[in-house]
Length: 175
Image (cartoon, rainbow, N blue to C red; front, side, top):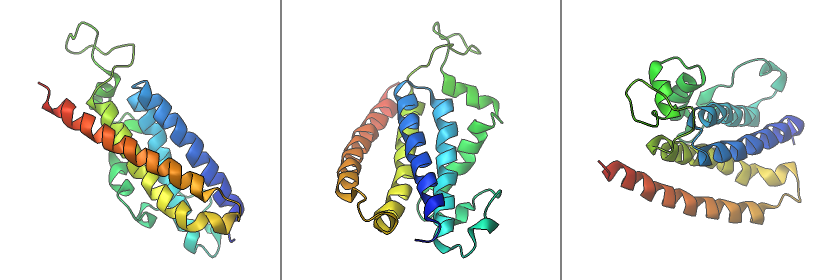
């Protein structure tokens, strides 16, 4: 397969980062997880670019083109870039408020909030973009790619996504 070495590296990098995003989300480390999620949006965009690249060398040292994405992940990129670059004061809201809820103070400890749930949902959006590519391409990279196992994991992720969506709705209903 064309560009297989590059695709394997991007795939492994994506999966490692995605696991870390979910681990950080579990701890409500939203800002750090969001920065890695932005990286993964770029990784999937590069993967998609490579599908049609006749000369992948022309892509080297260039930021991936988000227009290569086919799902909704590109819509998340601007907000996640803002977080990664700390380009607006509201990014500190992702860190959580002070323990005594004093305005203007930020917690030194991660705080669970609706931001955590939104991050997890967005992580599924980015994963879905990757999965749709992998589902159609993985066997071209390796004939013994464990596609059934990946499908099983993805089905579990969809179940978790649905559960997270319910929790987001509940959080929005609370005063």
